[in-house]
Length: 350
Image (tube, rainbow, N blue to C red; front, side):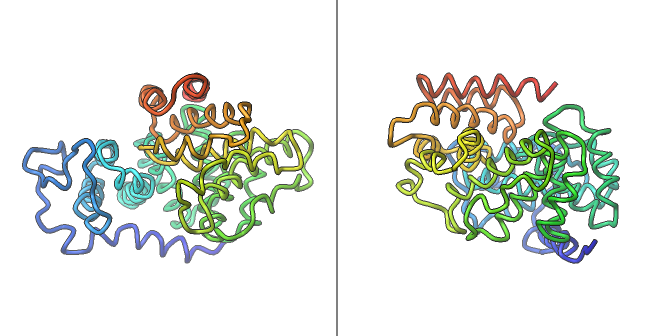
């Protein structure tokens, strides 16, 4: 398996640590708890925006903390993301970097046990990417996902990271084939992660191209098609490499009826929701626009809000945070569906 692309990503992940502008002024206090002496730009202030060009004022603080205490770095990252949409949008990728740094410093086995579901499990994805960059085989990694992950969602997220990493190292077809050899939730997450990385690499491709049975038996094909339709539908709301406007998001859910097989409408709705709840600070306006049917299709709307609740648990890391977000962005039957999605996720966390 080729590793050069993954290794180049690892180098980029720690680049910020090497820049003088990032490390200058770094105090010992930032390695533990944030203090009142930290600059206003990197303090946690509700509704405070941190411009992207000033990202090193917070991102490098996180990455420097990761050198000595990855758990503290993740906690700090989540605190910052709750107060700034700019940080929230970068939460997953920054958590990737924390995971890679931890894996480099203590080895993947030691680093793996320190992660959690925050920022869409970006930390674990980073550990996994580094693991493959270090030359480990994916089968060994898949077994470790099963042995080290404490619940269903963690196993799925672990597999998701493997899917990303295989595509980065090889290609989408290799990834989908290898994912199919893994057990249960690791396999399903791997398919989803591979398809997500393919979207990142090739955003202009039309949705649903890879969604066929791939020669699997009926049960396995159904699992794959659910993963495929839910991930490929993200393309509808994410756009072809350019973020859509609010107006362009409106009625996205109605496009699920374009799929020729009605049994996958709900999987498509999950993808629509996933595309607008993929950070730790989801936009009320974006979710209502994407999940709102312009034809009055309440069934599709409920499916979308149901998945929004589940997806927020995955990205925020806790039932409590996701439930709070549901209450802030939804009312009526939308709130009911969102809360149902949150409640259903409890089983995946036990």
